[in-house]
Amino acid sequence: MTGTQRIGRRLVVALPYAWLLLFFLGPFLIVARIALSEAALGIPPYAPLLRWTEENVLTLVLNLGSFATLFDDPFYVDAYLRSLNVAFVSALLCLLLGYPMAYAIALAPAHRRNLLLLLVILPFWTSFLLRVMAWIGILQDQGVLNGALLSLGLIDEPLRLLYTDFAVYVGIVYCYLPFMVLPLYATLARLDPVLLQAAADLGARPFRAFVTVTLPLSLPGIVAGFMLVFIPAVGEFVIPELLGGPDAQLVGRVLWVEFFQNRDWPMASALAVALLLVLVIPIAVFQHLAARR
Amino acid sequence: MRRRLPWLSLALGAGYAFLYLPIALLVLLSFNDSRLVTSWTGFSFRWYVALWNNDALVSAALLSLRIATVSATGALVLGTLAGFVLARFGLFRGRALFGAMVAAPLVMPEVITGLSLLLLFVSLAEAVGWPGERGVTTITIAHVTFAAAYVAVVVQSRLADVDESLEEAAMDLGARPWTVFGTITLPLIAPALASGWLLAFTLSLDDLVIASFTSGPGATTLPMVVFSAMRLGLTPELFALATIIIALVTVALFLALRLGRVASAAARV
Image (tube, rainbow over all chains, first blue to last red; front, side):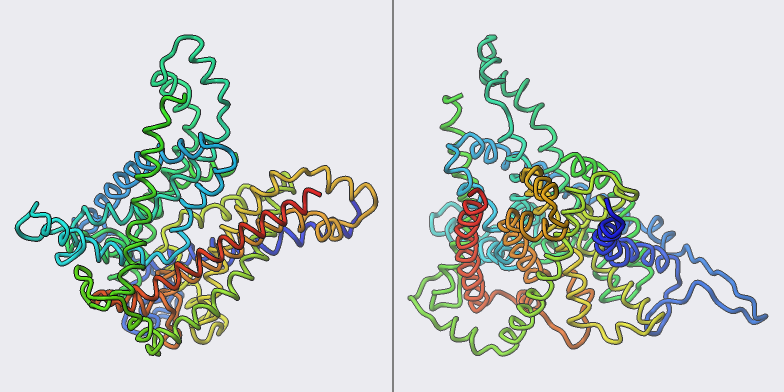
């Protein structure tokens, strides 16, 4: 490699590297910094960490108050536990729904797979908000589902469906399903059919062959899909806000309120730092899988 | 193997029904003369007319399209470089961190990305006086950053399928790296670039949370307008908007698929 080429190579790495350092990694440090500041009236609404005291000494003032509140107030702890729970159940539901779909697509004739896969992705390309809106129309008291059940005489008065945990699960599963199907399909499509043939030749029934051959081999896809749903769902804001009840206080929603309504930037930052810490292990697992690809 | 197919096909059909019935409902209701979702009083285009006359929605849509065009292009450049580096540069110092920074935005909860970028912009404004006012520029930077990750993944996986020996052969014949990239690599990954740009465009057009954090008083994007309208209740105007978006996306995706097929066929020749 000549010298110019080496410089060119460095430049190609440096541009995206610098961008991501500045606009992706750097901001996290600032969040951590502001989480340790005191809330203050003003623009921006937090006190600086480094301050001149009356004796003209530069002092570092770290305020752990936001983190203390986070651990003391059961409201915040509950929000994290609820979010983890909702995200876990949603990811599991996505898996149960998405696995048969991905498997069916992987087994479909080769010329049809692209179209079938495109049909899974297509809803993802249409507006996320408007898809959530469709579910409001279906689930609300005067909605399509209640209307249908009433006119069939199955119920006498509208069921409470919207603004419940049920609605939140439906919304998350609906919006995140493509993220589950794609990685599952990628691993299942690579599966060698000869292995299943061998299992059958050795006398395994289809179910046993599935459990002992297909399922373990598709594990990377299962984990990747699970993480792609679980991690963003923990911090989801729009779906619990629009479909959930007033008690569905998930972390994303709590953070939003702290920031936009209470204008408590240090508290919002502390919530973000804690959320990131909660998600560090799942994110690391996802990175590991992504790097292996 | 064959015996399991019937119920698998059934599951696939049920999955598609789950995915498409709500969308079909949106389209149907957008042509309903009634305001109520439960009664069909006749076919009408009135909500499309109302949408056209809703100045706030139309100007927000134009702003969103502008931001999406610029940020998709930026994300394409940045993401292609990142994907190329990850697929072709092998090991270099700092590769692990680089890989992590490219993959993490894919799963990072939006509230974290949005808040952290806003705090960066506020701190930068304090430290160096830029950006003076938050708005279109800051939203665009935020969108470039998170959409580039998606482009990088698309480009990287496409490059993994492209035979590296073609590029090596051109090198051996004396072509300079940039010539190789321009005449061999780029045409080979053109379909991935097209779908990467489209993906970045849609992500930007669709984003509510990150834009809400990084926007200023002057810039209201389409999702922000839709979100505040939705909080007040459903209006058939929004169904009409959804139908237009669905129609555009469907056409664009099938065109991209077509073009992709043509491009990859041309690349194979």
